[in-house]
Structure formats: C-alpha cells, structure tokens
Image: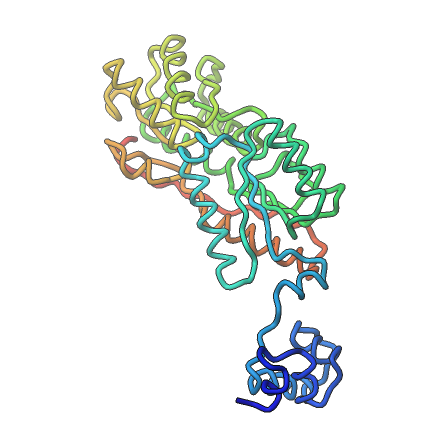
Length: 343
C-alpha cells in the first residue's frame, strides 16, 4: 500500500494525485478531465500518479462541478401498447444502448402517451435533470422540440418534423424506399397499386406517401385517391385501412404498407377476403423487422437501418453535449428493398 493511501486513511484523493505528480490540484483535474491545456510531460506525470495510487474519479462530484447529470433521456411520445407492439422502437433502443455502452451516460426511457405525462416531462427537463434528449416518432404538433430549443438543451430527433427541421435529426430515406417498393410492384405487372399510410402529421409517413405517388406517376398509372388508405402504423389500423380499400377498389392487385406491422394487419384481411398473396394481391411493408421475416409468406419490405439510426442519434447527441460541435446535422441513411415471397 502506498504512503499516500495510508495518509488519507482510504480512497486516494485528487490532492494526493497532484502531490505525487508535483503539480497543483487544478492541473491534475484538467488532466483527468481530458483538457488539452496541459503539456505532454505534465500529463504523463499525472497519469503515472493516478496509476500508482489507484485513483478513481468521483463521477458525482465531476458531474456536479460541470453542471452535468451523466444521463440522457430517450423520449417516445407513444403509449406503452404501441411501444411494445412496434419492433421499430426496440431496435432504436438497442442502437442507442450500443452507442452508450462505452460511456458513463445513463439512458432514461420515457414514454409520453398523454398530456399529463407530457407536462411532467416538461417540468423534469426544465429542471435540467438530464444532459440531453433523444426523440423518436415525433408528431408535427408536439411542443417538446420547441421547449428543448428554448431551454438550449442538446437534442437529436429520430426522423424530422418537416423538411425545414431546426434540430439535429437522423432519418432514413423514406421517399426513396417507398418509390423503390412501388416501382418493384410495377415491374411485377401490378396496376391497381394501393398504399396504407402512416399518420399524416408524421413527416416520415408523408415522405413514404410522396414516394408512392412519385412511383405511380413515373409508371404512367392513373392516380386514384381511392387507393390511398390512411392508418396509424398499428396492426389494427392496417387491417381497417385494408377493409376500406377493398370496399372502394375490389380490383386492387398490390398493396404497399408504410410499416411491416400495418402489412400484417392487411394480410389478415386479405386472407379473410379469400385473396391469395402474392397471386391475387402482392404485399410490401416497410422497416424489414422481424415481423417481415416471420410472416407467411415472408414479407417483401423496405429495410431501414433502425439500429444504426439509434447509434447515430446517440453519437450526434454526445458530441453536442460535449460542445464539440455547434452544428445541427440532418443525416439521412439509405434504405434497401428486400424482396421475399409476398411480391
């Protein structure tokens, strides 16, 4: 046991590290906190003292001194039912967790399904209980992003509210993915191609609808609003929209659903109606989740790199928290059509 540890009667202190290295306490603190404002010789001396004494920084004290909490919140403005039913969210959490695994940051998952929960979260954030916020599935009228801007809190969104998003955001190529899916259906000879959309106040859902419309136009097909079935990204919503589509256009021969979960709902309705997949009606989803791979027949789907989106969101937020950048990047990751038996 070192003399310094005997004098302190236990855990070595920052003062003892500074004394062993022959520097002041402030200089030792700068080295331990990674400041570049020290010489290489001083850094080596302090690091050697840390190793000799077995010094472990007090995370709580460091966080307090820097007005830091060492925690970030992942906010999902959805109910528990929706969160656990949609594979998208678990993949996002997995990606965020992977990016934080080698850091000291704690991840707080917050579901905001009603106004009361939204007010409670606003109070929590206003008190600066976290260092930054990640948000997914944000609707256009959600007040949280504006609150975060007012607070000056680092924040990154999974998906954008609009084309003119002001916060940092990580998204997938929703337009290109939908366009590729519908283009694939056209090449298979389908002509009465319907789509089941996500909520109109979610920018990603709107971009998937835009991609559908672009592909219909490029194929020279006649646009028909009766072939557009609004839904809410849920299995029940997909089933409901499919029933309405069949009632309006019984001759539908293909369906592009804006999520795999909605495609699962559509498949059930098609089977009940005696429509074979893909013989009578081809079916494509979006996400390429486990739902797509385990359906019968296996579902053709647009793969978006959801885990990579989560990892990228977390990395961008960590840089913003560390003030390494004042930029608010708008990152769009590519999508890929994965063709299976349903189309």
